[in-house]
Length: 344
Image (cartoon, rainbow, N blue to C red; front, side, top):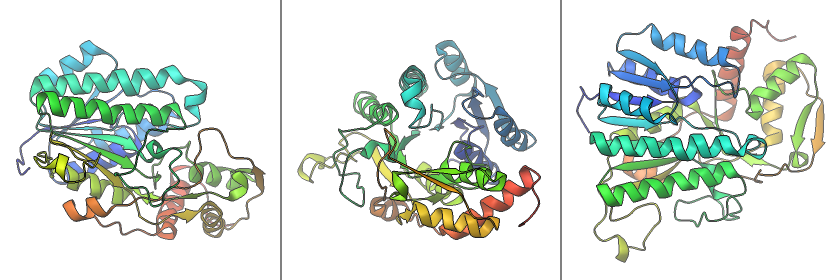
């Protein structure tokens, strides 16, 4: 897609990935409308700070509202008439889904239906939406491939993301709506989510508080730096799926279809041990962590590892940031944002 004038709608724009993507698009002189409900799942002050950086820039417009609000969503699409939509709004968090399951059905199912309906009605040229590595659930095969079966989610959050993929395919098939789903793998970096482990560990290590290390530290994650994630999303936005007329005879991968539908993993393609991540943080912070080793939490998986071959082949995506580099950038930002002095 080369239409430089096409308005882009980004939902979840005050969120971690959404704010970085919007900034990248504004750097390209694109016109961006952002939607966010500014909920209090984590500190709204962080969301407001992200939004403040965007709101001062030319080409950006913010609409506060909820994806679940049908009237608001219809009005937002009718008024802005976007050509490209990137849906990053969702109720996030695996463990929180054990405490408040209804919020996942509301935001991730009902809200996504409103996105699909309005994309259909407005003739959107490409919908890119956030799925999650959580959909792989109990799958023991590494690295995770989009050709793998993902019918065994281990959290309602994961189930809601699998549902998004199925819903998106139905709209691609019925209405020819081009849709691309991105299974994100453990996104981290400056301005990140305070409910993520690296953020919690940093806060607690600096405060001299013990950190909870689940499954006694025997976990690994495919940590993916925010700049690499945004680069991948940006490349995918320009790669509109067209459907494969030979799909049924080409192995029938669940990542593609005869409809204009595509799924990609977007990760670093390099799993890191949780204990190594903690050790890197200790070095950067100049303090040792007091570790409290605990059993595996319900809904957690032992490891994640993204097979990104298809994304690399189709878009040229190539993550560049090592975990040590990314955590260094995060710690520098954390000290600056929370006004914390250097190593002690």
